[in-house]
Amino acid sequence: MLYNSTRNNQAEVSAAQAIVQGISKEGGLFVPESFPQVAMEDLVAISSKGYVERAEFILGKFLTDFTPEELHHCVSNAYRADKFSSDSTAELVHIYSGRYMLELWHGPTCAFKDMALQLLPYLLTTSAKKVLSDKEIAILVATSGDTGKAALEGFKDVEGTKMLVFYPEDGVSNIQKKQMVTQEGNNLEVCAIKGNFDDAQTGVKQIFTDKALAEKLAEHNIVFSSANSINWGRLVPQIVYYFSAYCDLLKNEQIQPGEAINVVVPTGNFGNILSAYYAKKMGLPVQKFICASNENNVLTDFIATGIYDRNRPFHTTISPSMDILISSNLERLIYDMYDRDDKAVSALFDQLAKDGRYEVSDAVKAKIQQEFYGGCCDDEQTKQTIQHVFEKYSYLCDTHTAVAVKVYEDYREKTGDTTKTVIASTASPYKFTNSVLAAIGGDTTVDDFTQIEELSKLSNTEAPIQLASLKEKPVRFTQSIEKLEMEATVLKALGL
Ligand SMILES: *Cc1c(COP(=O)(O)O)cnc(C)c1O
Image 1 (spheres, helix red, strand yellow):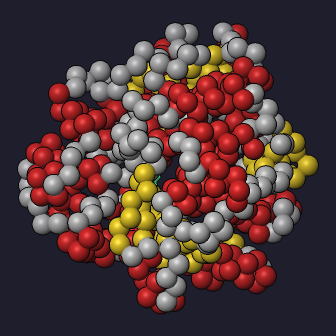
Image 2: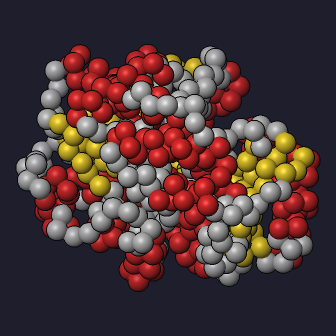
């Protein structure tokens, strides 16, 4: 299996190269040259297996330059039982009449990003051995909250890697900050910057593209890499859990082999829902993909009109991980819908960079609408949904998942489509305690940790130990720097 780029379909690299490189030279994203097929008998067969075996089966079809032993090493370490609090890793829970929650937040940081960021370090270090001949990898991350913590947990004490995370001093929630500054591990550092997320991101990009710095690193046998969400190594692990959900439905005799399901995904950067679409390209029977957005509804409009237009106000919402106006992974869908026409994709994305806008052809719009339904809701509706689902079905969902539920119910009412449906549940409700507590009528005037206790009492659910125990954890990282000091901080952290 080789990989092409969305902006150059002649480019051919191995999976290991794609993962180490992250992004293609001309700015495109790496995509598999074809989609390996999974037969229904194979799905039935792996239904009796655990998550690790299911993952090895699916990933093996894409990572053909990894030996079975290497793949087993990566996957079995990433999804170790002591890292995921659910026996099934990605747990499927029936809520009511054909609606299933795919809980992707039982990992160390309580958000779905763990599903990919627990595996990426193993994929990256294994890939690096193949293509970089034992260099040390220095990973820089700029974060607005969730990605930084998930990356830290993933790369904690991973041999051959060093990680440095920059976060905006006043731009993350108290719990998110506490999660990062108490991080354990001997190969990492966390640093606040006096600036916003854009400053952190710009600083990291400048460091990545600094030639003199790259040479200095090379002298010491170090290369930079990123744990960014457009890396193929972050996308491919996400394909697995859609197959795994289908396997669970088969195993529990909730569907017949071959029966189509719907999939609902609360969407930001389009990575998670694209993984579901890729699963369908491999043979997973999916009828409709329901793409749910918050008030930043650029994707809802795109699916309805074929026009992608980011020239609109940016809204800060209670589902912050979906506050995004440039959905990077959409480029991979457009490439597929344009039948791998790299020229057409380059033209559209050049236009996006220039004008903040592009429009797809009528034929492509029709193809997209065939597969996808887009919908959105605001914060008020999100809170009402949390309350409604909790009162009616005794199920507590986080703000992002609630957006998905609301958009799905709108879809179901509008279309009368009662196909069995898997809803991606992307975060623990305790990760967004304040909004969730407010939605179900709790007291939000108390401090964060008291709110966690309050939510636990009111909902009769257990708070994830890794969040509740943060209160007692010692702070390890207190450094706060000016944005101009980022490069010096990186050099110092690498001991140069
Ligand atoms: C990152 C994130 C999303 C959005 O996922 P994309 O792959 O960017 O579409 C949704 N919910 C939560 C909780 C997240 O952390």
